[in-house]
Amino acid sequence: MNLYIDFDGVIVDTISTTYKMLEELGIDTSFENPLAKEFYSNLDWVKLLDTTPQINNPFKNIKEIRKEGLYNPLFLPKINSIDEMDAKVEYIRKYDKDIPIIFVPKNSNKSTMVNTHNSILVDDSDWNLYNWKESGGIPVKFSPKEDPNFITIQSLEELNKPKFMKRLIRKL
Ligand SMILES: [Mg+2]
Picture 1 (spheres, rainbow, N blue to C red):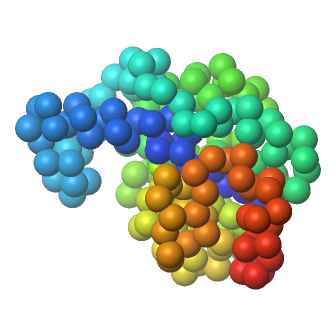
Picture 2: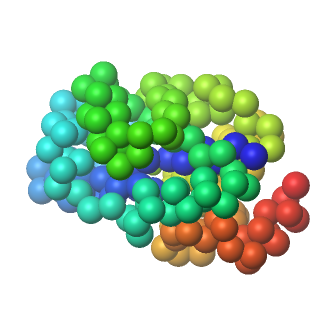
Picture 3: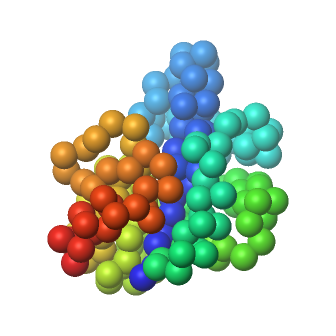
């Protein structure tokens, strides 16, 4: 079973970091705001990734998931620019030499880039998750807060646990 994993807000806590930067600049954080769009397009992603903490040992957990063999993990991150793509590849390859990475241009849907059928998407964005569900995939919300609309996890480690499996089987 393919397990597509988002990057920002799931692997690295870039969402909190960039929101703080936007607030300091007095820019509204909504993605529709042209100033916020410009901010994300011009961001120094190498520096941002170097200074932002990872969330709950993601790369160790992905190695465990691969070893367990139930899922085929792949990254499915969105990108605003080619520089961001370069920075993310370089960053990911420092920790995992094998995982496939499929980049999604900011104005495309994740569900149009890959086959969603019987595939899981772990993402922190409700919008991406609803779109994934509408396209026949299985959405899993990554969040510290339980979301009644989705199966919710706060660490990738949970994907290998019986509690998650039980909930997943009900969705299949
Ligand atoms: Mg995200």
